[in-house]
Length: 114
Image (cartoon, rainbow, N blue to C red; front, side, top):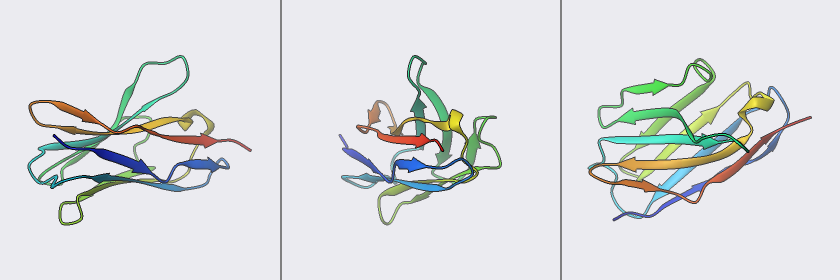
């Protein structure tokens, strides 16, 4: 069992940046995959980025070159650096930890608008 708490969301203008954080209630070293997902209004939740225990990162095509996922096992935290934000990045962003089960945070709202 683990609790995940996201933070760092907010309102930003197009072209701006945000850094999301996901703090875990216990060590994340045992979770092979940590990930960020997002869900826009009226759309299904989609994977944005994943990172393995070996720090191999994978990204959705829509965010490649703009977003960077990282994990700090010592701090039990996963980050998502988001640059060059676009209005279509507007969504609730969720942190996910996966071993046998999936664990989710409560989400943080990101709104990209002028």
